[in-house]
Image 1 (cartoon, helix red, strand yellow):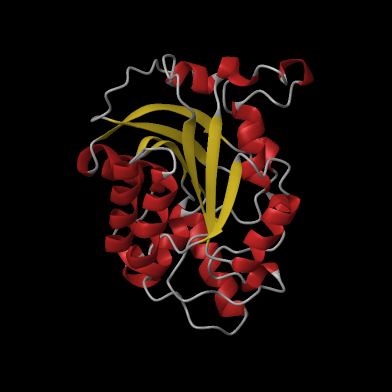
Image 2 (cartoon, helix red, strand yellow):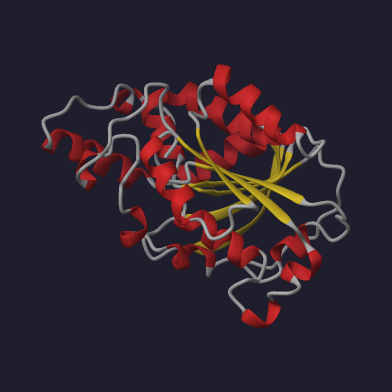
Length: 265
């Protein structure tokens, strides 16, 4: 998943994934457990009047299993009876990026929707690389922003490698680029577990772990940053996964579109 500017080495074992680039991530956090929390017809509720194709950005997509599951769920493709009319006519183009080139290659080779889902090897924290790449992608559609962004279990890795200021910069960047943002923050206990894994392997600790002032209830802290500093509002929480991670949907206050709030917990 997204991390620092130096590309990570391939990771032979789960404990040796200091950037979140686990090689078999979907085996222990199955995509279905996330997408099942999202209500049906979500795109229709958020974008009731959109006549153009919708654009989505998935940051830290790993090998793409969750990206594909989100695409299927949002377009209603898990229901064979709705194949001819996905999401009541909605069309979605999804750009998925990850820092790990090997994971991206796996995602490309296994993608069932190559015309609609693009996978890119990209460090989202490297502004010199991300800005021309994302601008070029958006320009193909005559757009300057994405309709919806997905940030699924990525914030911790950004935070551990880039510190408090890096987390704030990351969230500010996403909020400026996406009308809606679906985010799944890792709780603080995951930070401690990640640090323990590194120590057990005899590796150096994360540079910023012991100096992070943003800590504790990470879902609440990230909500505060997005709502107070990034001009976003919390639309709803769709509940939590069985591994205790909340799915939070935010909307840009600067949006010109009137999206109805979906039902959620």
